[in-house]
Length: 221
Ligand SMILES: [Fe+2]
Image (cartoon, rainbow, N blue to C red):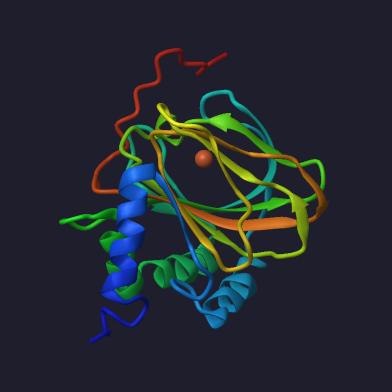
């Protein structure tokens, strides 16, 4: 049986929970949710996963980022793992009892969350993720969790645009975990040196089929 308090103290969890509730975004310090060993394991496993060059998001937003997909979440379907055992092993690490308990505490949740989508982003110089809303990919996305896997890069700031507050700019360091509500628009500014790499996953209380309705279907065109 895992020790549910092994990651963070109750005080730290409460501090992060209040910040997430009040501001919609919180940056969890390195070493709190993922050890160096966890990060090294993720890095080792992800090398087996194929990579796609992505230029558009789900709402036709503009991106330039290399993406490795671990779990997909398509309209009308249940989330499903893709790309074999490397993806499965990384997701098992994310879903470990301790980590899930710590995250649900930060979310302020009274019920369990599921990971609906999971992917890795590699951003060499010139890459960016344009302004978008995660909830447009799946209306049940509540929080996105972004684990920073690289340290030697410049640019690549994560900017959140809360609806009734000033924008927040984050410069995540290696091992930090940024948690943000999927209800605020955000972007990743262009990377101009080095390579930014992150693991991104989207959490929801809804475990059923993706309830997104595509209004202007391009199917068949
Ligand atoms: Fe996003």
